[in-house]
Amino acid sequence: MIKEILLCEQLQQGNRKALARFISLVENEVSDYQNLLSSLTINRLIPLIGITGPPGAGKSTLLNALIKELLQQNPEAHIAVIAVDPTSPFTKGSLLGDRLRMSDHFNDERVYIRSLATRGALGGLAAKTLEITDVLRAAKFDYIFVETVGVGQSEVEIASLADTTVVVMVPESGDDIQTLKAGIMEIADVFVINKSDREGAERMMKHLHSALHEKPLTTWQIPVIKTMALKGEGITELIDKIKTHQQHSHPESRTDMIAEHAYRIIQNQRMQNISIKKLSEALSSEIEKEDFNIYKFTKKYYT
Image 1 (cartoon, rainbow, N blue to C red):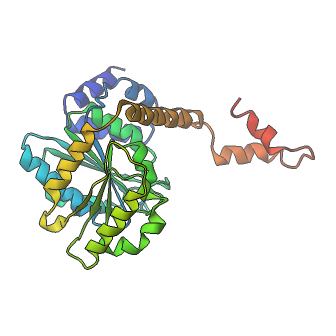
Image 2: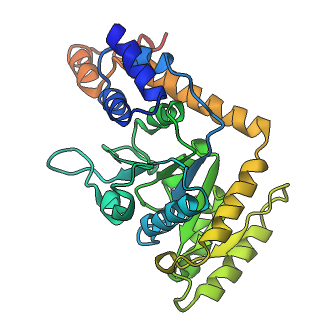
Image 3: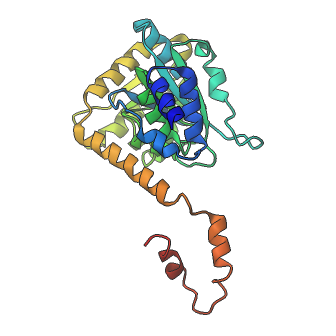
């Protein structure tokens, strides 16, 4: 117990080794990891920004440019990045692709980058992302970014996690706007057209504005920003829009977000001792019975 208390104290003092150790304990669900999480003082005022969008949109390059600009604006800032990568078929760990693309900041003590493997999780996020972002909010950071794996329309899960969701697209996506309306089009707080020097950027801008006009009016008018991340163009404007959106956050939306988080925690805890293997073993002796009823069988697991 003393070790756990010491680990929490070191984490909240900004110790990076303690942070890495804490995240590993949570990610691997070691014994009593929930008690560790319960001991944290979580600062929910730290901005959590989600970066999402289809594969090839340049999310990692854009994030690299955002970090660079934020550190130029405030050299004392500390930034954390959760880069959700595909799972390696061999090690079941992260492929670390995003770490390689953000190599400019890899040795910067002000920037903490952690790659998480999806491990089969849907929605573009790793299964433990919720808990790990709370660990980061207990450490000393000024900004937290979560970059999703890039699987297209299913990446809507980020909206229930991030205070501000940035959807990154490219000019070639212009013909797909109608398709995207029901998916990631619905979760954006800020739209970015990256690689805007390519042909079709203006057409893409018109498509997005047209789609946004069909959305119900709210106090926050979703901006569309053109960037060229490799050249650093449009990055300052994007940061300004992110900061402005943070100021537009409503208490009820934050409550809804935390309620979603609470629901997932409760759901995970209730499912902790249930697995397909265990269900299969229990079913093997029941399924052959003439009066077998799957609803009756499953009821004992949730009542």
